Image (cartoon, rainbow, N blue to C red; front, side, top):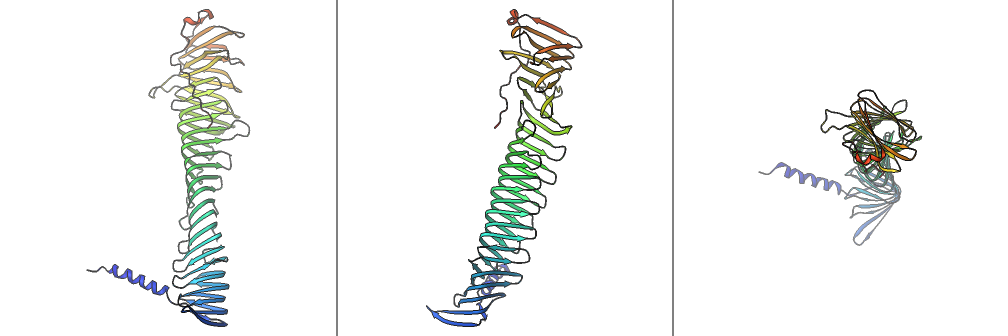
Length: 474
């Protein structure tokens, strides 16, 4: 049994072929001359020339018609019309068998949806397709495209562009070497040296897909986003940006850099970063987190950074084996919370979380004196609060299970070691960050060992670990 589709398809193709190959008909000219060359009939028409091919109307000042080849060469004020399409140029070649026009001296194409201009171009009437090159521009009430080369489909309003492409809409400006623009679905796919500028951000990347109806962008490869309002920028391998909610997700080698006009720039490194840019603004980082802000350094698995929470106070929270360094001070705990006021660390809270697996005491280590590289003051307890005056440690408060070791000095001379413990401990430091005063409110114990006997005692608390792998700028 013969399938109907096997008959219909060749029939349709045959009809289209016959339709496309209908001869071009000369309708009018002020002057007409004819001749034969190499068995080919050639007509030269001059003045108010009018051709008709199927439903395509062709006008010009002068034309040479190659009858057997079914093509014409058009010169001077060339105008071609089909339905709602208009094509204008000074010189063109029209091929009847293919129903296409080739224009090499500037071309303008107009239809109800857009106006296209270029140095050169080919228009395929049966395919509703334009292929323009050389300083191409397409203008629509909702967008404008400039490029070195462009393919445009009138039926779908899809544009495929390359060479210094710029697509401008009411919501964005996209630039790249290659851009596929799907107007009706609101999708733009860009690749090679991509940038997209929106109301509050600029994104740079190797490739990018923008969804204008949802106001979101997805970028891959050497991604960077600049926040135009805050000056913050972030980088990574992959990015999702949602302008309506001011939310950004970055994965793979994520870096956040937040410049501060009056203080230290924040550098945050992680494998995954989320930016919530609505007020109050904050950032969530996960996996191999490193933070650098002046003398404040931190490492952990999870961090949240809140900007301008109240009265210009920034807050940094660290969980997942956090380690913090402030100059010669090191702190570890289950959870660490830091307050930054006017770009300086004001308070640091360290908390033990007994409910988590492998919970550990909060632990502070600080170099006791720069002249003694092996002497470290140590404080351990459940929960610790450090306060700073400028960049210097001012006080340390331990609320339970407090244990401490600190060294004594007379001027620059070492003078023994002190062991202290109790429930509630307050340690006050002098301007040189040496212990000035210790206060224990409950169950106090203390022991002093003179310098001459210092090597006879254990000088490090259990769980003492000095971490040297501080974060560094990359």
